[in-house]
Amino acid sequence: MSAGIRLEQASVVLTGAAGGIGAPTARLLAAAGARLLLVGRDAARLEALARELDPAARVEGDAGGAGGREGARVDWCAVDLTTPQGVEAVRMMALARRANVLINNAGIASFGRLTALGEAHVAQVIATNLLAPLLLTQALLPGLLERPQAAVLHVGSALGRLGLPGFSAYSAAKFGLLGFSEALRRELAGGPVRVQYLGPRVTETGFNAPEVLAYNQTTGAGSDTAQAVAEALVAQLRDGSAERFLGFPEKLAVRLNGLIPAAMDGAFKAHRLALPAP
Ligand SMILES: NC(=O)c1ccc[n+]([C@@H]2O[C@H](COP(=O)([O-])OP(=O)(O)OC[C@H]3O[C@@H](n4cnc5c(N)ncnc54)[C@H](OP(=O)(O)O)[C@@H]3O)[C@@H](O)[C@H]2O)c1
Image (tube, rainbow, N blue to C red):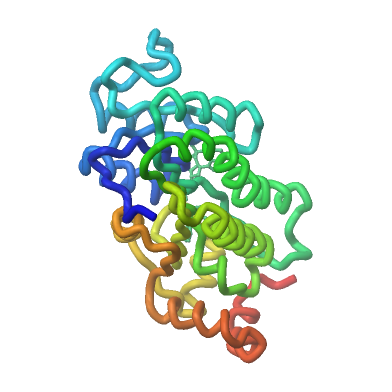
């Protein structure tokens, strides 16, 4: 199998591109010379970022259409990835741009006791954080397999290997994404497509609601800047490594949890107590 991705020759599809981690990632990838398709729901934010990175980027309503203006290194696609139409629109634009990298970064937050989470919210968390990246990967894979060197990188979470009180639905999705990533990596071994999983710890973006910030403060969770996570993501694309978790002691906790999960159960009383009252 090939080594990591050569970014100067890459054509990247980045979901959640205008978000906290997405935007610095897009800037680093553009600076490295990659072509970019920025994906998210908020057209105005995507367009502003696209035009910051490439003044030739398509403007809404121009004749550029799928694939953008000829020569534009950056284009954008405003879609809801939880819909079949959204996935299909990205697939068409990715094919036109001969994409060889998919970064599944879009996601939504979820926090609270399971009994306090609405049914529709739980369904949306699984649809956005697990089903959408799975179906988008499935849709783009035939095109990726035609490239000499390709990668699918999932932005998971430390909570994709370590379940904490208050994150049952979120962890269900992020653990699922890790299982998907591992199985697909083994399925595609020996071919041109690398499958990678990045597990950030708490990251300083607008993602986390005030009650999560309070919980993190009470439990002493460490955090990273979005820029640091973006740099780790780009480094992982370059080195081709399969799985990476960020931060210490999170890395240690993730590793121990994989080896001796039941023995770890007693370590989270403070987290349980830090949950909002039922
Ligand atoms: N921040 C953290 O503490 C943290 C820690 C570990 C892992 N992560 C993971 O890192 C990733 C990025 O998080 P972030 O902190 O950058 O959050 P963010 O700023 O909220 O960005 C998330 C992005 O996902 C996009 N998105 C959400 N639902 C979508 C949908 N249905 N269709 C298309 N796009 C959708 C949003 O785009 P629009 O705004 O355009 O809708 C948004 O730009 C997520 O997968 C998250 O789970 C975050």
